[in-house]
Length: 361
Image (cartoon, rainbow, N blue to C red; front, side):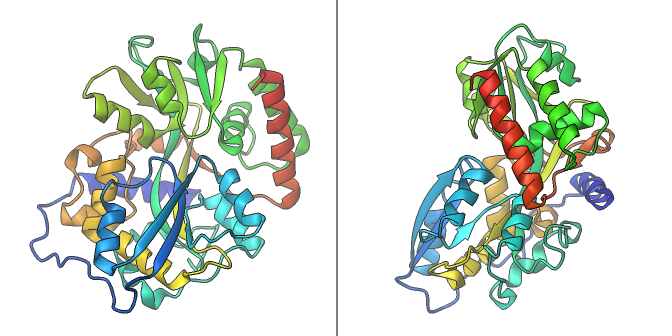
C-alpha cells in the first residue's frame, strides 16, 4: 500500500512537468509475420479508443474480435469454465492474483514487448504479480462517487452524504470495492478475510442501502446521465467521460474522505489462448507512447505509460483533472484491493449475494 501511495504522489508531481510533444517520436510498426491472423480480446466496456483496434488491424494486417464484460467476476467465470478462445484479457490486480494462483494465465514473452520500457517504474512489480511475469499495466484509476451537481451543489465529501441522500443511488457491482468502503469506515482492513468483520460490513451496507435503486455493472454513469439516479458509485474515468461528452458542469466526481479504492487494470494472456504471441504484440502496441496517450485521452483514465506523459502526447486536460489524477491531499485516503484465498473469495461472494437479495437487486 505504501508503494502505491508513493506511486500516486510521483504521478501527481509528473503532471506539472509535461513538455511539448516529442519531435523524435517514431510511429509504432508491427513486426512481420502476422498478416492474416486473428486476435480475440475480452475487455471492459467503454475501455478502448475508437481507432485503437482499427489502427492495429491495419498495421499488422490482422482481424480483431473484441468482446466486452462488465465485471472481473464475469470475465473470470468465463475463463474458469474453459477459455472459449480469448487471447487477451484485462483483469484488475486482485483478479490477476487469483488467476495466477489458479494457473489461468500464461507467462509473457517480454522479447515481444519492448515497449515495456515505457511503463512508469513504480507501477511495476506490484504484490499481485511481483515480477510482472503474467501481466502489464493497462490503465489505473479510482472508484468513488459520481453525482449530479444540481442535487449536490456544494459537492460530496463523505460517504454519509451518499447513504443519507433522499433520492436515487446506484452502487457499483464490485463486491470488494463496496465492502472495502464499509471496512474502511468500520476501522477494519479493507482486505480482511475475517468472517465476522465481513458480516458486519454486510450489515453496515444493508443499513445504508435504502436509497439504492440499482447495482450497476459498468454503466452507472449511464444511469446518472439519463437522470435515473443522482448518485452513482463508479469508476472515475466513466464519470469523466460523461462530463467531457456533455461539455457541461452537470456532473462531478468525488473521493469521499473516509476512503475509496485505487486500482490498476492489467493486460494478460489467458491459458489456452489461440494466438498468445499476437496478444503480446498487441500489448507492445498499447504501450507505445502515442497509442497509449490516445487511449487515455479518449477513455479518460490515468495512463501507466511514463513515455506518454513525458512526451506530451497526453492531453493537459486529462493530466490536470483531479478526478483522473487525484491531488496529493486525497492520496492517503485511498486503499488497494488485493486478492484473497479461495475461502476469502467465498466469504465475500456469499456476503455480497446475501446483500443483493436483501436490497432486492
